[in-house]
Image (cartoon, rainbow, N blue to C red; front, side, top):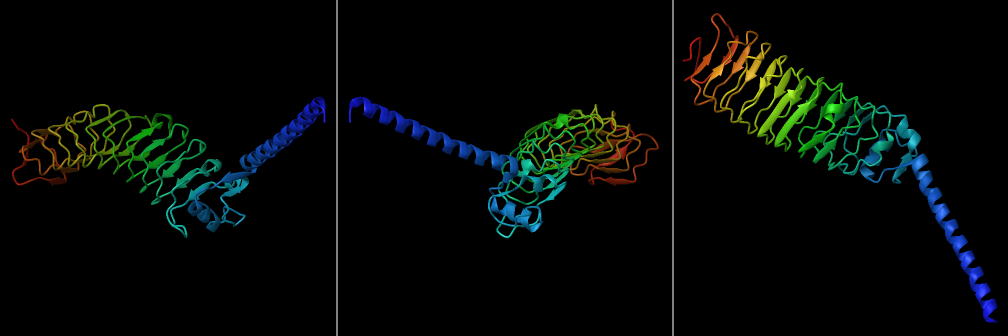
Length: 306
């Protein structure tokens, strides 16, 4: 064979090989597109088994995927029940449930979750997982969020949730927290590591629960609608309540307060300030009656605490 013929032969073989390779890549891409267009990947067997058990994954086979159209039919996704195999660790595939308004995944083993595609969510329960951060910036329709007892120290996007009413962040790892949300009415953030807290951006708050943190002071002057404040077991040395005329329930036991004035809180019906060793006198207004009062034996209510 001449050199020219050998070269031509090699060129032809190279072309054939290239075409075959392109064909193979084309088939791979077609398969990938098929998964993206028709199927959702569900890599967590426990998650998929629950979807099968609930009749959502209609092929009924534990194969790491489900029809996208099955997911799109679902409006409420409740995966609290234990699967046959154990806790769910990965919710990959939840992005295909684009029409859910309700998601509950309580008591699983989730360390992260992507809810950016679930833009219709209004109710979210994620208690008792191992989540550390949560991004809710795409979930603007949220009304209720409960992430009690995780490892969360950061939650972003709350200012975008213009319908939010209830937020529970208790039993997590927040060291500082500031909220900007004018629709929020109830905030629970007890049993964290808080040394700083700001609610000035949430003027319509009606209840704030801050029990068991490390707060030395709080400013509630921007919360005139506040009805319930629970701030027991902190390090408060004092608190100003004159800007909270609607306050009905004030619990501040086990702090370090030296003085307290509730004379500007005519709606107060339950006052608990026992176990403040340096607080002996609580100032009230003449004729003010508080139906339920919990004090230590060395404390008293008086119109004059000078």
